[in-house]
Length: 49
Image (cartoon, rainbow, N blue to C red):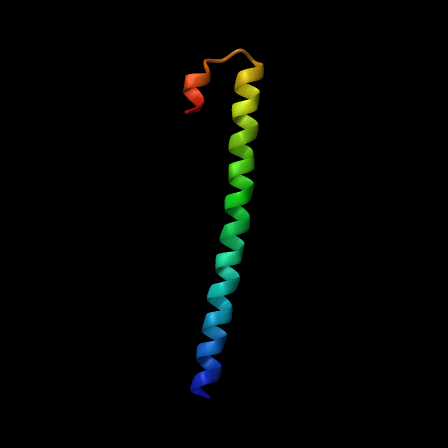
């Protein structure tokens, strides 16, 4: 029984980590899109750093 509880906790934490990884990928893509938009609009590229 204890092993099942531990496995459930591990599975839950793994699922949460995967969700955060997906969120991180989306946020990085948004940042990249904003940097591209800044360059296209003629903004100072130093601001993107």
